View 1 (cartoon, rainbow, N blue to C red):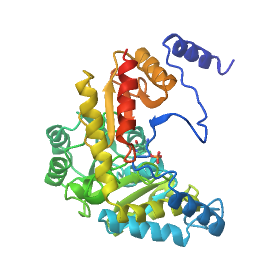
View 2 (view 1 turned 90 degrees about the horizontal axis):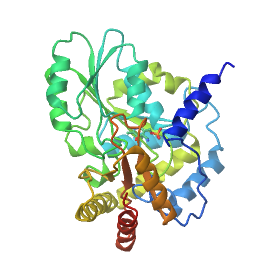
View 3 (view 1 turned 60 degrees about the vertical axis):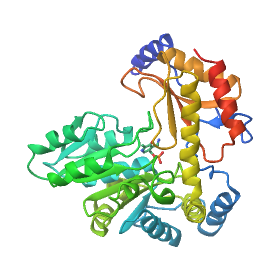
Length: 375
Ligand code: PMP
């Protein structure tokens, strides 16, 4: 049996109680949602869904081709212009997913002979970008500018430092100012994934790099997803004109992938415009995260102080984390659950999303369910 080894792996997963299954979400789910990445509560906002539908009506359900052939519409170029202006960069390029944007930025900016210095807590898409790149990767200790300095120190030739701005597991922020300084000292470029920062951090949600004063710097390239704060789907790379032009010519996930669907581009554009009009949504998401953290730690839970909208609560073991999340669900609360192999260090967590549109009563209910189901 060619695939006999799959059953062996499945058995091991079952024994460990770590089997993953898919569960369709009903359109009118009765669960209180602290599991999604819809940080600003925009995925179902009527203005955003209307814009998605209108974009599909005008431009079609699919992009119909690669961006270089038929997959670029006015919506795509308008979205790119407005994203670049909002986040403070010269230019932007949108992709079908944030994952594809990360693969593009990392691989296209690390040629043969280059060094990629990658934070140990980076998202899988950055890790995969490093694996696909032609350079050599060195993984460094989490959020440690000195480790970065040491890794970059001895290298001659092109180098890039690759890091999330906000780490998806614990919701902690990278020390961007100090990382940028370490990179600058050795002439290295910086590739930052702001998936969890856009819409939440920076002035009115302009992102963590804007907040740290490094947006638009000539050696800084930022990626983000359109699927979290902007409530849509897709990804973006922001940077200097020359870098974006290079990606158009060299990034395989741009050239060989069908362009972002018009409905997703239309929804993201509408969400961006709404965020410009209602900048307080960003601060509200941060405030909800801080409240959630304070109430959970007051109940004796071990949580990581949130820097953005992700609140991570420690669980005693992977199995109990899975069971805890199940019990929350049974009590009407959807939460995320991170455990191996998604998190390599063996520390499992519940992952809570502090949506800007959660009410105080909903926050209280969430904390009460988490308390009542404590393992
Ligand atoms: N980077 C980070 C930090 C993420 O959390 C995610 C999504 N989970 C991605 C990239 C990928 O983005 P997308 O879902 O748009 O592919």
